[in-house]
Image (cartoon, rainbow, N blue to C red):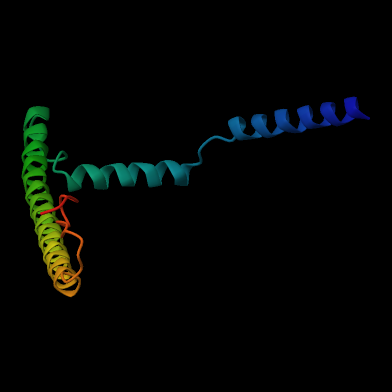
Length: 123
């Protein structure tokens, strides 16, 4: 039984591989690929270029300007995020100082020496 199952599985796998490799691309698929290639070349200006160097120069200039724009956008976003983080941490530090002052005022009448909340030692 085990030998029969293995043989059947091997035959089915070989048949699937043979069918996949034997099926050539049809004419409609080739036409679609050619049309996509032409659209891409026209979109990036390579089709009407006189020389390959001119085509490369056009795309590299486009790439450089889009890279510059992207880096400025990233810089603005990271600056905004850093500013928000600084603002948040400043507000939290102020809240902790205020809370520490309130607690020191509340419990300052006890006989134990006051402790600084940030150094954990007597004042």
